[in-house]
Image (cartoon, rainbow, N blue to C red; front, side, top):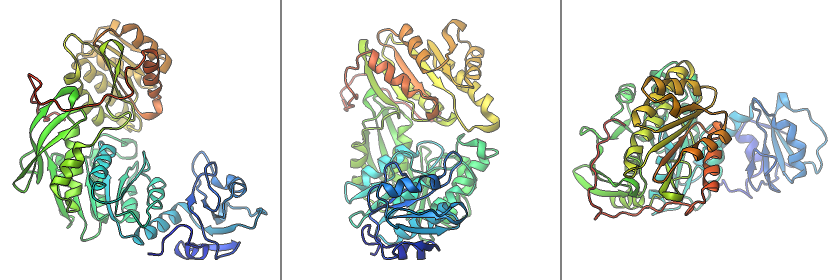
Length: 495
């Protein structure tokens, strides 16, 4: 294959992206690609992007001084100035679209299988689980963090090298057409749609719009590609019907191709279930808590089945999954207090799933303290969704509830209407205030649950509580103890 950093030249790149070289040596090779002038390395190509709050054209000089061997710029935005060292300058009409074209070509030059994952909730956990399964057999690249948009996904693909055999990418969206474009760039061999829920509604009128956007993956995947989708999501099933692609379903209902049965909840010790597929039953043991992780595991298993991965490898990979920071992460504090850090992000569907799993983690005699940050990009349902969030906290039986953000008053209103005492519910001014309030209220055996959109800064609350309360250990290691008495069996019908 010809796509190798250190060998690919400027002339090859500008021919691929329909660009023009206006200065520098066309035979210049590039050591890599970067969109960030702060971290660019010597010999790399600086790819300029223009956003709402920044314009990469303003940092061309800085990137070149840092050692960039060339730059890709937009014709209409670039005012040519003398650049030290005569680097390559490639001009294009649209640098973002050109980045996607180049990334699609780069992916096609490598002998890899690509698994793409999208959905309103669970996609990052599903991505991590699936990558853990695939890397047991062959070298696997996965998209880091939230590299799931029209910039992050191409940057992930550019990390593919000759040793990689599998690539797992996450696809996010906040407007129609984005999943379609991402699918065209990644060229997946298989895809997973975890669900179509209440997330990013600001860019869509309703849930039907979200579902239509999710199934863009099915429309654009290759004719021999396979897609696994949540068969318990009636709207997703309806929207995806008749698209002429091979679809397999996963979920809890008996009519799914891949399903879980005999689910056993070990509370803080994790979950077990039997994975059913084509009359084959395999016991899966998850180290992570949270009943919704059964569906995440089914989604990961379904994606790997679409790639013809043996079921014994799937079971082994799932058993090794240790969870993610900020994703229903259990953090023990002093006095048998448990902090559940679910602050990575939030939307109504994810919050509902998380709250449904909280009660099983509370020790006898313990209370629940909930701290929520607001949820972003909900459009017309912003007020009602936050009121429902507060109501769910009250229905959970929380002893204290603290809310922060511009929409916190809606959450508090929902909790009060559902019967929580005014003395136990409060809007806090910010992270520092929430830390102080929780510290004043928490006692031995309490469970503290924190969740909110990333931008709300709830991670600061997590850090404050960890530091003040002298964390016993940096992580809670989950292990299966099947001999535990009174193991609870719990269904997931409310998820």
